[in-house]
Amino acid sequence: MSDLYRLFPRDSRGYLLIDPESTLSLAAVDRDMLAEVPWPHCQPWVQARIDEYLGYVRALRTVYNDAALIHCLPNELLTKIFGQCVDIRVSHVCRRWRALALATPALWANLVNQDAKPIDQRLRTHPSQDARFVDVVEAIFARSGLYTLRPMFGHFSAAHVELLTAKRSQLTALHLRLADLAQFHIFYAAVIAMRGLPNLTELNLNLESCSTVLDRYDRLWRDDDLPSLRTLSVDGASLRAEYVVSSIHTLTLQGRSPCAVKPLIEALRRCHHLEVLRIVEGAMPLAISPVMLNTRPRTVSLPALKKLQAVHAESRTWGFPTLISYLDFPETTLVSLSLSGGRYGDAISTFPTDTACLRMRMVTEVELLRSGPDPQSMSGAATRIHFRR
Image (cartoon, rainbow, N blue to C red; front, side):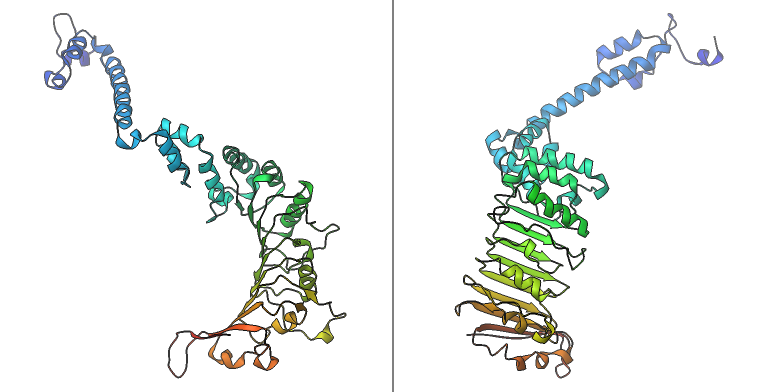
């Protein structure tokens, strides 16, 4: 027997005498049981009792949480609340909430439809992790039931094709930010391969990272590929006839690169039911002389056009007169021009009023904006001139 063993006080049976003060807070039954435990087995016995009591604490904590007022809400009300949520963390509160969240398709549809950030970026995935990304989004799509979906993707690859094919009839809007031209080719071919998107009403293509000149395709999108498409927005690339179908009612072009005149005219020729045409910022075609065109495009008839809106910042290269000379639309069309100058020297006096584009009888609304400091007032406030017939 070691000297260390002899240091601890013991009773007549050789059992370790535990300090009475350390056992005062224990229940009487535990003190009696501890008195019968030999010293070498004291710590294992205490650890076993700790684990047992921790289990009791967890069980009591569950009962406590279940008795909270928020957990007394009926399932029908919780389901309606979850149907308005866009955060998956509601399923982490308790087992009951998790079961209800998993059984609420509207919650999962909202997770897909949240357009503040692409779903692949919200899930913190990378294009190289398409396999994992598709598994996660496929699970979300599957739980969305029959709800309509309006996803936004920050990239597009072959892995997305199978994902969209499974829910093609539920897609009502699609927003794609394409990193390169190859991704657009995949999407363009996918629409044809999956036999179109029958219920898609809105398509937003962000092609700022792609080449401004896209290849021609052997087969254009047909009207039955996108029969319900009403709104098309193209950002960062020149509009081509491949992108449009006749059912489009609202067309928005924007980006830093001007559209080419001929492809734009040929694309508009397919838009028989176009009601609103918006050309924003750098997408406006450059001012070009008809002599520079090998063959002048035929005039495009837009009988349903209700509003033609042009917003541009560089008045010196403004090609609105060139564009409008190729368009034939009703006299009732609202033609809205918003021209903004940059430096004070490029202010309102530099806008191309000599082209008669602002004096055309079809122009019913003009807004001139001049930004930058005014030498006379030394003020940085914008000057706005707005008139409407």
